[in-house]
Image 1 (cartoon, rainbow, N blue to C red):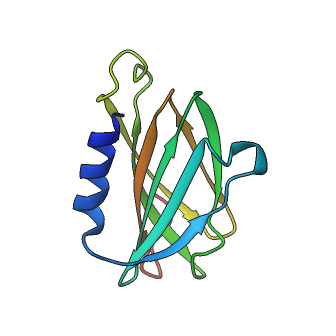
Image 2 (cartoon, rainbow, N blue to C red):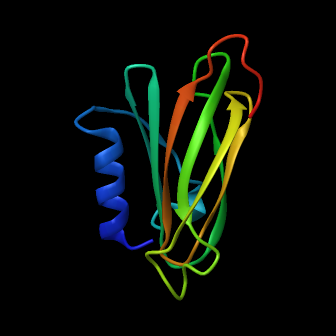
Length: 124
């Protein structure tokens, strides 16, 4: 996903909320991976970029409150290295005890919206 495309999508989703959490990269990824989380009301938004290599990210969700979250992800499509503006979408339900697994293409990234699931609703 091109940087311009990621910026526009993240800005459209998040609006003017303030940054709440920056998820730390491992020491070997400090100059190669950035993931930030922002909250607006009860909804969280994640945005991430990866440089230099394609990689699999396993993002902790421990900053979320208790309960289940419906997660919508816009991420690099499988052919993103040849078509960097091609996106794939995914919907899933996870809790703060689980990790969000995302594949980032070469110089790729993702955005995600995490919304609390109303009590009584099961997994998607």
